[in-house]
Length: 283
Image (cartoon, rainbow, N blue to C red; front, side):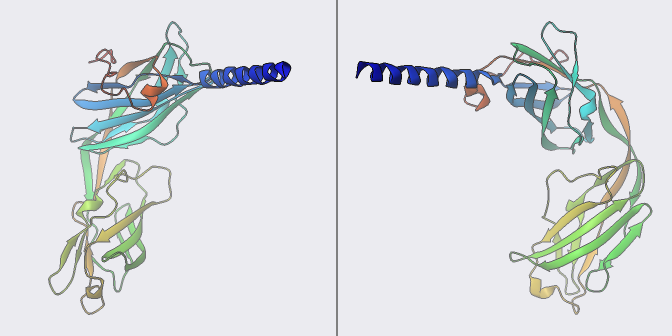
């Protein structure tokens, strides 16, 4: 009986020890919040393992310019090392004016379980001069589904009643080589009997055309009575100041540090206490 109890105790101790080792495989860091050139940056959900480092970056853009951050322009290094690891993300993070955007930063290729990690956004891009506004002509969606202005094509793929309103699915094609901003919130649906409805559909991150893609999908939603969207009422879409083309200019990005924390930090339980006033070297 004593032997059995000893075996059980040994098994439990071994299990607890194994669980502790499993937890140690993940290394957590404190959240960081700072401002840089008037914009706000919050770094959270920060974790590292024996071959990766990952965090979530939230950028609040208070300016009137789009901010473009390419992952190839972000590097990270552990304290005391000269080796810089480049972010492995592919899609650029684009933050619209007066808007917040979250994206994930990930580094790979070494053990990042160290007390301090330095992140350098070596370069960002900002929209500069507006080069053109492509004004697509109004389109009667009861009869037509295509419009083009310069390098911008708009193609309606679907239309239907949806949740007490009217939903339109379309694709935008752009054959230019600049930065095309997409202000979908300016799209208006008009009817012959005097109805006028602003698009209240997709308002999140689809504010630009991603270069290299064949098209960008957009979903428009209008709080209109679907019964009024018919041939007799001539439902017409108008696109005032929707498609704007800009040049881009480079600018410096922030450098910041994250420091060792706990799993409570990762879960957001210490968010207020663990904001680091010395997070960035470039304030």
